[in-house]
Length: 548
Image 1 (cartoon, rainbow, N blue to C red):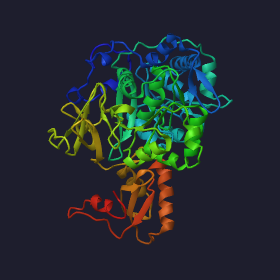
Image 2: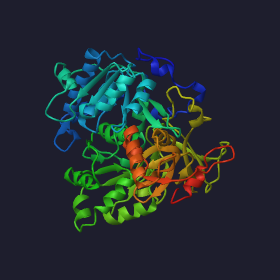
Image 3: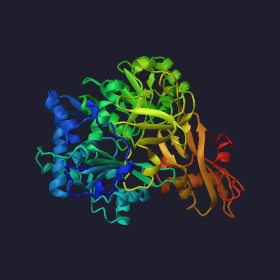
Image 4: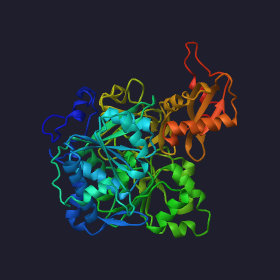
């Protein structure tokens, strides 16, 4: 990353991995060759408005619709607040915390246009988790939805580097600080002329140790993902209405529910977390055409489609269903197609790669397979020595393309990128036709309902409870969620391992870390199986009682 930069604060640039540890990036192909100066906020929003789409709907919720013109107006006002009122300097990190809603989307785009670096966070994260992210990014500013500000304010008390938390109402009639500041700002803003390789976003993903890793992506990366998966698979058009469940803090949500629809002049339904029936109701009410969610959500919706008029009534407008976040089983694929007449387009992407790199358009879907390498990307199966394996053999998935892993100041970069290839932590096999078939994770990550759960992080939370002497957390198979976190606990002296303690431990973990990470199953043991050197034999635990 040499040459021009608009960033006055060089914090992120200074903490990129050494160049020799970078992945090979495909920026030679015409679709991924960008000018030196590029602002993703301008490309995603201003350019779309300039195409004559100002009056078209951009963002939809249960009670309002924002046109592209209004989204541009609100985004520019927030950008002015960031620069004029909150003192943002290009290169500053801005933490974003909110549910999927228009104000969060506008905040995202405003940070990009103002030359800042967006640091999105999951609404479910607790104060301790947020404090780690703040400390890692040295974020001075935060935009936060008022009703979920409590944990962030607690984190701010622990990490004083976060100087200002500016709250917004989040969709109601009342106004909070951000809305009041916006009202005094003009609806015009001259975007910062950022470089295509200036960092635009830092997305956090839990590693197998539970220590958060910040994946840094540039303005060029944000544009690159709009030129591969959506063009080859989704094929968006302005009349499309996107709908989905992933948070905008996820790479899946950032692409599918913000970057993709805006880039192609479509609109998107932004939903707060809801039930399967609520999702189906919104899908029907908004006449959504493109659905993006995880296999767990498709399985949950299948249970609601038993009524005779369900599929016919609710899927009249839907033309494409996409899945990511966890492996799509053949049983889920076939049940969905039988119930709705629609095939689910599977795919895989990672936070480190920013979005999909393997998938297939509907007419090329092969049931049970994840898909083929998408335009601009290459994928291969390798052994532990990075030697390519022949078709049909299971090995590590290695990928490279226009995006790739660049961790923020993290030695684990050496593990993820080897010889220019990104190693995703997944085991696959490739067939003779170039389709990739998922086998398993190659690390201890638990993938539950599309969420990554690091077992050691759950173990650390459990060990804070006085009734826990030892514990180990592994993945267990689950019909609805694919996998769940299962805890094997050795009770401390004087504590009985019973149902009451199991519930107490589950509630305790929910209070320590994001609630979705809690162990949905708890088993008690007299001792954990260990090697002679004292290491826990997790593979033996996975084999017990339905472990996987």
